Amino acid sequence: MEWPELEDLKNRMRDFAARRDWEQFHAPKNLVMALAGEAGELIEHFQWLSEAQSENLDTTTLEKVASEIADIQIYLVRLSDRLGVSIADAVERKVLENERKYPAEKVFGSSLKYTEYQELK
Image (cartoon, rainbow, N blue to C red; front, side, top):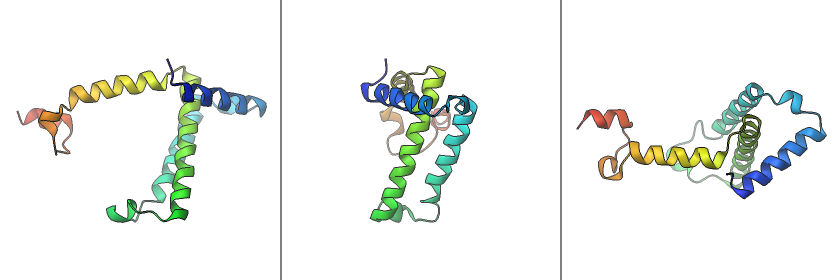
């Protein structure tokens, strides 16, 4: 089952595309490619910043970043809709998987990938 807000957004974006006859362009392959492009646009805003600068964006940059985040979310919602994937269910499964792979008592304060810390046992 989808989160109500995402279900509403899926319906709204489906209607948006249908009223423009854009479904023909929204094959999963095309949506993934558009998503990658938008992720690249988001990356551009952070590319040459220090970690500290990336945490303290000026208002103009923050507005541009928010717009790119929105584009990414819209493409994710369209992709999940076209593929029949519930984002809520997929996120829940992934969170449970990550909790299993990264138990807090073993990985606290570490940035190692789960396969690396398992080798350190």
